[in-house]
Image (tube, rainbow, N blue to C red; front, side, top):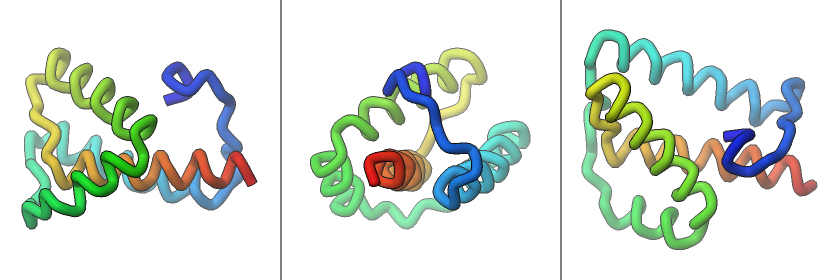
Length: 95
């Protein structure tokens, strides 16, 4: 993420801590090849994708890397959660 946005993140921030917690559970699911139980809310995903195109682009890069390196398809719901966390990090940084 720091490579995509070319920024330093505030590792003491609340948004960063929440993002790390999310990543911790994501990595556990990745290691066990356990996908997120999806609710399939494509409408919400599309709204967030359009509203936060930079976060979407970053998440797509992450998902592509994970797919090629670990043969794990990142679900739409997981991508949605990542976009929201990334956008929260960016908002906090802009404040």
